[in-house]
Amino acid sequence: MELVDIPNVISDKILRLTKHYSLYYSTMDLIFTPEKEYVFLEVNPNGQYLWTEELSGCKITEYFADFLGGK
Image 1: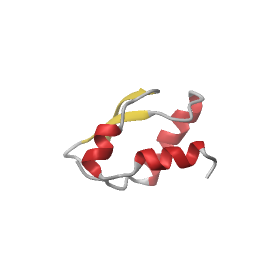
Image 2: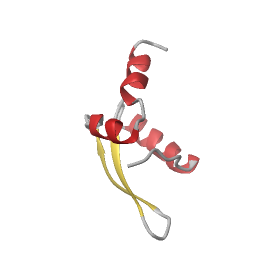
Image 3: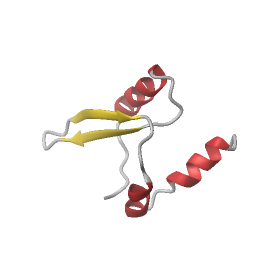
Image 4: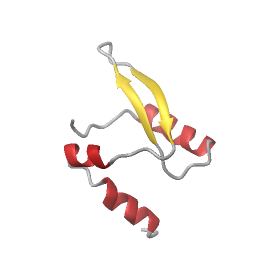
């Protein structure tokens, strides 16, 4: 597992879908194919992330706490 940047067109779609469902938080499952295409699988409005934080080193909990604290 590693932290990667995704194209703005994909992150924009993720944000639009999250807002469409009036969510402040969600996790989404995507596949990056050998043909270099992103395939959406599902949105999880209460998805678990701690295991990905531990494997990737990304400080998701810290960012989430900052968001909740209004930073």
